Image (cartoon, rainbow, N blue to C red):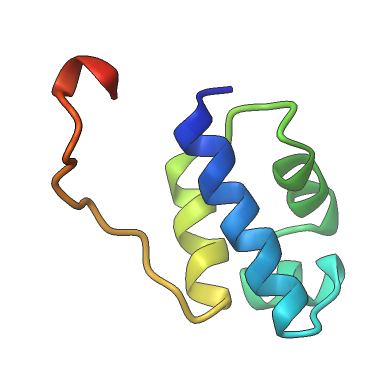
Length: 75
């Protein structure tokens, strides 16, 4: 899994913990199953973009595209 994707997932996990949510509660808020959240947080499979967007929204966050200070070849 690319480093950038793992970093996004780490931030989502941190946000879930900060809000005191269980995986099941997050899954319900995102209209997903708990097993989808568990697979996402395990970082063993590449998540689909719509899954990341739904989880972020359920946590009160948004995924944004921000210009990088690094060169495009590093992304």
